[in-house]
Length: 206
Image: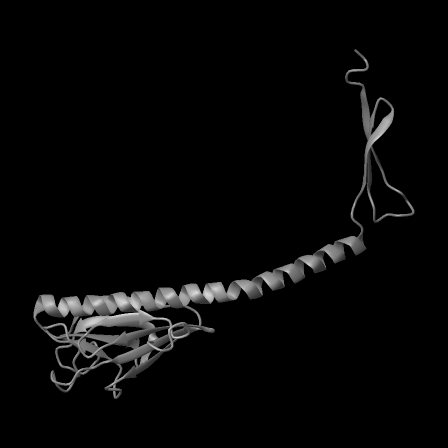
């Protein structure tokens, strides 16, 4: 019976000459079955340096994935807002506009509204239909539209894009979304079709 579990003790000893290390020993039946020295200061710094290098490499590889996720999300939300504005114009049998929340900068968000006084600005008498706040870091939106005097998009009662000046003049073009090196483009045709594409992969058609 004494041979079955004859675990004597765990001994912890510290070498006075090497205060940076800790030695752990375990004796079973008088034999040392486990022996391990703890990390010293040099080993600790080496491990920390290696971990820092691995983290830097991982961060560099992870950034393009994060940028891609951001630009895909922003362009997808903008396309959905355009489709909503077009659908509301048809449903209400009236013109519906979409304007940026911050002057000409679409990257800070956008507003779908019925612009009663046709000034491409939300004020008294206008009806807000949908608001989207954007806080994506590093997002840039470049608009290339037919009427560039003011930042806006508008749809008539037939769901076709129109300018602020006339229903006969369509407001069409494209908006380029970018975060870092990742890009997406939304193209609005003169008939109101909204298309989302990748200019880096579909250069011929995007």
